[in-house]
Amino acid sequence: MASNKLQRVIIDTDPGVDDAQAIVFALRLGAFQIDAVTTVFGNCPVETSTRNARTLLELCMVDGVPIFMGAGAPLVRPPPEKFGRIVHGDNGFGDHPTPEPAYPLSPGDAAVEMARLVADNPGEITILALGPLTNVATAIRLEPTFVKRVKRIILMGGVVRGPGNVGPFSTANIRNDPEAAHIVFGSGADVTMVGQDVTRHVRIEPPLIQAIRDHDSSIATLIGEITRFYEKAYASSDLEPHLKGFPVHDLLVMVYAVAPELFETEQLLVKIETTGTETLGMTVADFRHKPAGDPNVTVCTKAKAREILDWYRLVIVSS
Image (cartoon, rainbow, N blue to C red):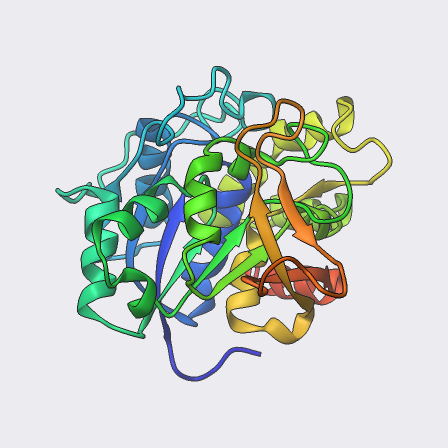
């Protein structure tokens, strides 16, 4: 599935149980040259997401990938009161304790470093955005050439069909900073949206998570432990009671980057609602035959769940 040539990427993330699984998959896949990991608030405060990112890179024995801490709050709004505690716990890792990582935090601001790397490497770097888009929007504002020089932006968030997860029409990554999403979606960059109306149907069910928990590697052990809280949250709440297992939303960004053939897509005009009450953060897709503007986003509409999960299992428990 993956090309022999490594894709240069920046992973912008707020780990986060599903972020953690996506990051580990990306690190072990061998398809990416990771120029940086940038952190943002979202599933947890940015200080916590940064610690978790350092833990993951240390666990995967990565060397030399800089981690830059980024935005701790939206562009114009206060940070979320509860973050993602209902599904990620207080520490972003489902309340599973981990030792303080030795992996270093690099000096510098995430958005500044993202803007610099993209400007210095035109057409080379893809942004894999797993959290709110605050860092990405700030990089666009900071660097006038960013939109023309970034290769593409692949993001997890939004819905075009079906309900949101934090509102009737909105998902956490977009609603946590709708103004940032508005900037990114309207920037003119090559943007692909992997929305939760797709990701929620790619779910880890008991046989797969048990296979991970039965594996004796340190990576599988961590995933097995941090997903216990997450699994229980989906099983005992009203999040998605009609669906079995639990989703691994952010994984699909990594998979799309290397195997877009596992997805169906449409080119759509998508705008971000920034003023509504019930609709704040809605990704408004124009499905009309003659939309009120040119398409600006590649929208994933379906994913091959079985193939994706089989690949995930192979990567996580292969050694």
